[in-house]
Image (cartoon, rainbow, N blue to C red):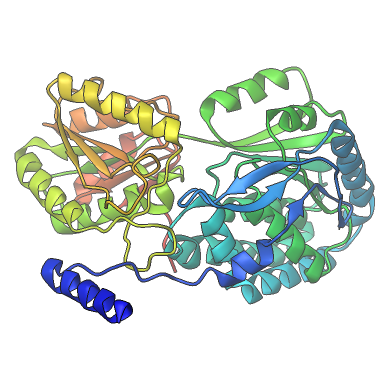
Length: 466
């Protein structure tokens, strides 16, 4: 009888508020695979069983313990690099066709494990399941397929080219699964071997990738995994047998890597954090532009280099566009990673929440308008920070959060002329990407010619989710 009363009460509340409750996606595959696991380094095709307690990994949305990971030791680093160096001698001798067979096999096995990859990614990083399902996992699969094809052409298209040796990949805690493929696939296709150091905070997708590599038949030593913190990263960076270092993460850490390797023969490839500006002119389709903001500012928690953090809007449409943006943001649903009804899930570290709240308070004191969506009561107020828009002021005065801080905050600044818009967009230490919104082709080409960025999107942001 108590259950019936409870049901009637729930139905009554639903009709009273007309709000849907959480509809949860399944996490059973990921939880079953992770249950009771204690991950150590993955070296020479096998897992190293380390003694000691290790670091507990928690679901950022719920705080529940999901796995344990043991930090790699100096001995593990030496063994992993030695394993990669030994494997390199035979791996580089394979023809491009033979290397392609292994990459094709790895891509096919990733496809077989899409659901598991999605769930482990969401459990560890707290991102909405739709993000890895629609983008990260398909992108990883496509990269391995693409570079499998490229491996067969390298000797004919780049005659005389030789692989470098052991490639080290250093990933920060905010790197999505797709970035693993961006580092591993081209390196293996070119005949190099890889030692990857995933972040100690979010190592589980990398651990799963190593598990899948075993199933795919990848030769031992070609891919090694060393979970750990900055000490492990430094040991890898300074190792004499490492030829190339790739890093994705904060700019401040990138500078430290450059300084540490100065004077060495090691090559560097870096994808650093940044602030992607989106320029909206009065000739733009404002409906499409405002919809794009909701998808591209908070996609993957904003933890991708092309996530929009600065919105520059022409003054003549600023007020109307701001109101349109508020109305759209008010309709989004905030929820946990496996909530199908949620549009945005923004779990932050508790310290980040404290820091951003203090910054928002200062913004209000400066006279800037702050618009926020309410976090539902059933979510942790210490972990979920609401999507926030900061309107008005000069570009310098409304930089609410630091450029290396990942938080759900977008600044919205007006501009008058095309020249001013270009100057504002270029007024940054970064230049990863920018997005231009206008239906005037001549204006778009003019702006494109003057923006100092590596990648420019026209009436779009980021890579196509297809």
